[in-house]
Amino acid sequence: MSRYALSFEEVWKSYPQADGRPLHALRGVTARVEPGERIAIIGRSGSGKSTFLHLAAGIDEPSRGEISILGSRLSELGDHQRTLQRREKIGLVFQFFHLLPHLDVLDNVVLPALIAGDRRSGYEPRARELLERVGLGDRTGETVEKLSGGEMQRVAICRAMLRRPSRLLADEPTGNLDDDTGRRVMELLLHLVEDEASTLIYVTHSRELAALA
Picture (cartoon, rainbow, N blue to C red):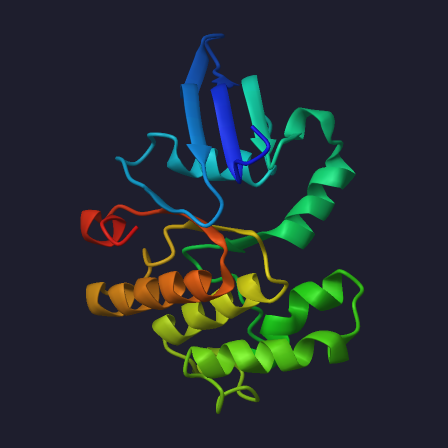
């Protein structure tokens, strides 16, 4: 199993309900993702897509089954170790950007490095390079409030890629964008992860965008 970027073995995730019966978000999921693969997850609302990503990121724990990352079982890691793994090896992209409006574009991108206690000077060149690659090299000093939705998502993608994650997990990364902008952002994301040799798993409602994986 050590060669897989991510593996789920008979994973269940259940939540208790008021009547005492469990609500099963995932039922016996087995999945194996090779390093460098681009995987799209599609399905109706409430089918467990986001739950899958949260488990893959180590944000949540399975009720049953085993999740492994490059042979390392998440069940054997404590909360602090899982947090460090997310910080060092996983990039996260969300539907609603989660940028800080009082910071400028560059500061939003380097923020993960500052939170980790790293020197800004060690990551600022990387942040500027990423912003240049997504067409925002001339917007670094502007506050993100001045950006369009598509531009904000490009900043969020740069932030997720800052520390060169081996896995990028994206939850409806185009869900807050119009169709044309969403496709451009998705194509940009796929191009970036190919250049960086990262593994990408993304959730989408769009079969058109899923077909890009």
